Length: 483
Image (cartoon, rainbow, N blue to C red; front, side):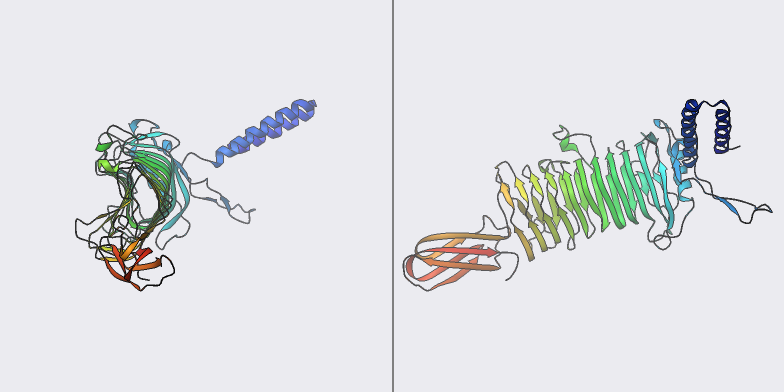
């Protein structure tokens, strides 16, 4: 007799006895207790700690006109049911791998992308435990989607391979499909690499979510996303060393917190508190928003965000906070940096590889420094000068304690003479480059003189008149575009 049948039988017997003895108050009280007990049994039956069975069919009796189907329990795989040790004392690698394997081999419902079976939202529940892992938790089956792993801590053992990743969405097969996985969610996890490699690896996957995770003690990458599309990293914290800034060993920080080697990814509302490089991007059309990088100060050799895709950047960095560490962009083409706060002399560096900068907007940011003469935007032309400079706008940034630099400038000069010169080198970014000049000539008194723009070179503008006159000359210049 099943638990539900037994509970209902008790309910019937108790109801009859209560009717016979007529104790209404006791009956009501006991009835409520029995109802609660029955509900608990039913709830326990619905949420099973074991892998869900396949639907069971019973042969119809002669009096039964149709087949009776028993609905399976939800597809939740509890790792402790496989022998995983939630105390972190014993190795739980094989137990969790078996749970992952069973989930990937579980019942499916149609396809997501062509060739990727829909697991229907199956879950691997870590049950809030701490699990010791001695080898990468590499998914043993590909072409699966709609699966979540959540709710616990994974820590690398002291003999974990230093080139491995604790959670590994990849394959060792040489005959793999174009896309390995789709809609895999990693949520509410603490991933501790124990200075033995990396945290999470996502290879050739679609629409992967990494949400509310804390990833630490990595030596290679905290998260790497290579190939595929649309890995979304949200509401997470990453750091090689657990610190809140001002760490005495900061100059020795190494590794990369997030490595995006693919297209169309998004990193939002993420804090990176220690690593040599906060985020490195070598794919196109990525979005970084709400990022706080204080991973390693520029003065110690650190970089907050490194854009390493010369000639086709296509990256947006918005609403972020670069804290004593800056941004480096190699040959940026189509790059926007906006509404971002740079603290502690942090700056943007444009690095020439093939001498191209095109379609760059660095606008509406805040820069705060220590009055040490640091430019807010700098050029690295050690590999050769920038030769192709088109559609570049650096403007409308507010600056305190640093040197304003931009591609647009204006100034005024006055005096009595026949020539007026304005030097824009202190504020323009690119040397010897002015593509557009506009000036206004205001002579004193009611006089009219002939005047002309005589020379534009070395970021200096020369205006001359045909006669000596006292005048004021207003000049505006633009390096980024022809008007």
